[in-house]
Each structure stands twice: as structure tokens, then as C-alpha cells.
Image (cartoon, rainbow, N blue to C red; front, side, top):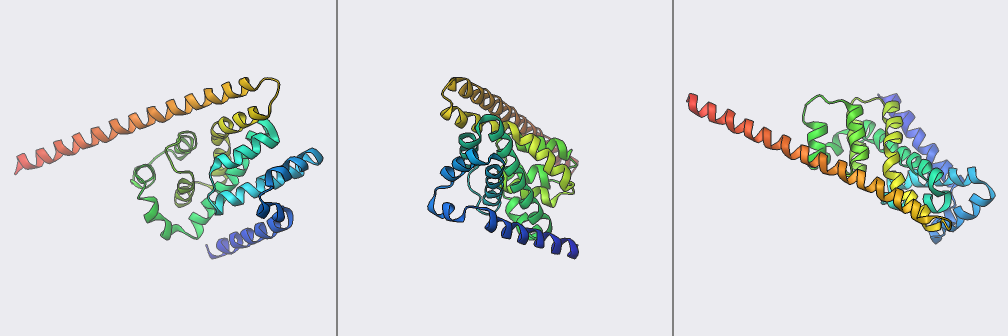
Length: 239
């Protein structure tokens, strides 16, 4: 465990040093990141994409900025398809960093804060055995679980990091596509309504999934309350 913590600490240190070397520090402080990435994308798409992924991954993990900010940049600079892929990738790396911090550095400190959220407490710390892959699908596609909190929560579970990272990337694509496709539509001159329509369709599906999930949760809570009442009634009757 100690060796793992050391290697992970060195990984974060190396990531920080690489960020200082590659990232446009001057443009970040001047607030010209969008313009910088647009200019770089025309010169060297891969280099611009790399800067975007590293910048958004670090900002997401350590600054907890809203995900819509990264989607705006991705959709505007890299358009619908690559914007969605790069945005999902940066969000997955950000989630992976939080996962490792939760597993190796903040395990005891972060758990009491996580348990304050009713959904996270129920699905992560209730003691019931759950299919973690299914749970990943639910938490990544249904917008009722706080993104940063759930990443730390997964670090406390026994799910392998590789499965967590790959599954997170795949399951986050619909949510990121909703935003990146919409922002790509703002810069699309030929048929912007098509982009807005696709984004709206994804939004409707996500809202429907969220509604069904909350309804299911209410039904489960109601049945548990009823069972507890019956159990208490039976105990009182026996007395």
C-alpha cells in the first residue's frame, strides 16, 4: 500500500510538471484559452487536443469547475464528434484522478462527507451488494449523482481502476454529447438545427431516465418503510 501511494504521488507530481511544460499558462491567466486552442487546432489538431484533455482533466479534478465549461470549449474548437470524444476522455481522466485520491489518500477523510448525500449513501454505503458495472452505468448516465463526489466514492469500493476508467469513458459519452453537440451547433453554418435537435433528443432521454430512476427510488423507500412498520407492529403484538 505504501509503495502504491508513493508511485501515485510521483505520478501526480509528473503530471503537474508536464502540465506546466505543455499548458498555455499565460493564456490561462489571461482568459484566452478558447482563442489559443482554436488557433492551435488549425495548426496542429493533435497538439491542441492534447492540451485540451490535460487542461480540462486537471481543472476538473482539482478545481471542480462545471463540466459545461469543458463541453463549450470542446464543441466550439473540436466540433461535435471529436469534441464529444475529447470531452468524455478528459472527464474520465479527471474522474480517475479523484478515484485514486479517494482510494489511497482521502479514504477516511472523505467518507463522512460522501454519506451526507442520500443517493451516494444508499447505493455505495448501505452494505447491500450491488453490480458495480451497473452502478457505474446509472451514475454516469443519470444526472442525480454529484460527479465529483461519486468519483471519490468509487475509490472506496473494490472496483478495479481499469474497469472503472474504461466504463466511465463509455458511459459518459451520452451526457457529454448532449452539451458538445449543442455548442458545435452554434458554430455550424450549414445545418445548426440538426445539432440542436440531436442535443435535445439526448436531453429528453436523460431526463426520462432520471425520472424513472427517482420514481423507482421512491417506490423502494416506500416499501422499506412499510416493511419496517409491519416488523415493528409484529414485535409490539408479540409483547
